[in-house]
Image (cartoon, rainbow over all chains, first blue to last red; front, side, top):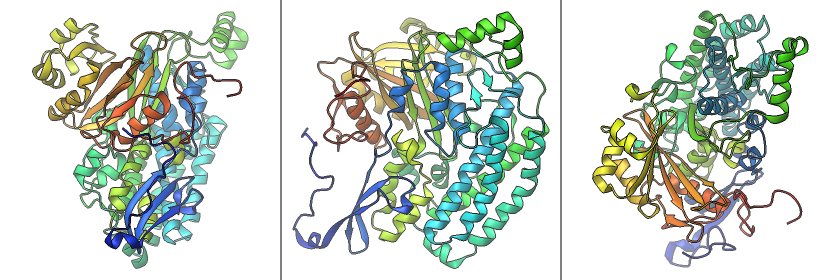
Amino acid sequence: MTDTIGTPILEAPRAEGAKDQHMVLNMGPQHPSTHGVLRLVLEIDGEIIVRLYPEIGYLHTGIEKTCEAKFYQQVVPLTDRVDYLGPMANNLCYCLAVEKLLQLEIPEKGQWIRVLLTELTRLNSHLIWLGTHAMDIGALTVFLYTFREREEILRIFEMVSGQRMMTSYFRIGGLAMEPPLDMFARIQAFINTFPEKIDEYSNLLTGNPIFVNRLKGVGYLSKEDAIALGVTGPVMRASGIDFDLRRDMPYSSYEKFHFKVPTSTDGDVWARYLLRFEEMRESTKIIQQALDGMPEGPIKADAPKIVLPDREKMKTQMESLIHHFKIVTEGFAVPAGEVYQGIESGHGQMGYYVVSDGTAKPYRVHMRYPSFATLQALETMCRGRMLADVVAVVGSIDIVLGEIDR
Amino acid sequence: MSQTANNSFIGKAAVLEGLADHPALKAILEWNAQALTDATFDRNELTLTVAADQIRAAAQTVQAAGYNFFEDMTAVDWFPSSPRFQLSYHILSHTYKERIRLRALVHEASASVESITPVWPAANYYEREVFDLFGIRFEGHPNLRRIMMPDDWVGHPLRKDYPVEGYR
């Protein structure tokens, strides 16, 4: 094995025959359509992609290392910042993993509110995808429309948790606090009009011949390649694999909801585009079911040594004050062991691997984020295509650099 | 594996008895029973520990047994105990709708194992990440270079003995 340190990422094109005309081009890290700080090193023959090499790590903050120095409950705010477009999904995955370690059961209402808000998060994530994807292709208007709806979702998040983006609302053992009384009505009002809004976006784009021609047949990924390259989520389902963790390995009461998992066999950018629209419609249905069947009861597990007491109890009862003090200053010990918890986030299969050594701080937290694996498939999707198609393909795999670099 | 949902089998003997017809376990035993050094079923998750020099063959075996999707791979540093590193591979089956964990223990002196990139190309980035942050080498990896840290970085940040404060 040779030492790779210091060698150029793509060696200079060799002078054998047609390769003379190959050129190495840098796209990013400050390119507007790379959704953050993704750098793509492209070897091109005229306008045809010969090789593509994603260079990542510009946003690496060492979150996994930071987690090892925090108490279990202090990791929750860190998880928000990983996939910054889907804060609740991050919280959910981490909390489920630690709850699995603790073997803690969450009351039904807590689980349902988690489902409700996680699906809203999915809508939030898909709306950003749609706006930016269309903008990359040149359809600037849609961005303004999707951000109008996203704003309402963020207002709901603010109402629930006090924060628009970094919510930290799901906590180990339940939720941070009771949701405000009019939250359900507000979500209902949003859901009542949202299907029309989806149609509105669709009217703007789906029939537009320029948009369709930029997307159809571009970035093909076969079923076999999708499995081999670890692609998950909408990209995988658009390549014909019918698998969704929400349905197939349910968590947090998802088995009680009825929804379809849209799939397609076309495997191109257009299929992914249509599929995410269907996913938004299905998410709307899940939210409606969650609102209709919302159970009564507590939102936190009955585990005073793990779950922080309500503010009022803490101020009036000695026991609760002691528990509060102990949890905040010393954390809580988690039995030794290792767990892996996977959930279906907006981008694909997210997973947290948490190893405990029996103390109050996690020994190791590893985050499996879908975009990291999906990025490996980028070369397969782009090779042999035009340079301009790279923009369409990068948009269609819906990457968030925060979750790739962590 | 619903019938065993609430049970825990700790220890190889208990797992071999309790999960005798588990497809992955059966395949591993048929392939090479000696390579399976430990097995645990805890919190509804099956962990199969295989000898570190057999990891690629073990990956091929579970892949053939229906565990078709490579989901995740990472390392844990158990400094200062020995063997120091633990590699955890999470393999998902779309057929059985179930996940298993393959585990391999690696000594610090020879922190090198066979790459499973030939089995699942998806492992490419994950092995690079482990190489970058833990300093474990993967034989047969097509492009083993740092992925998160700059190419000229010294040290492997996720090791437990990596300094977290002070000047470098």
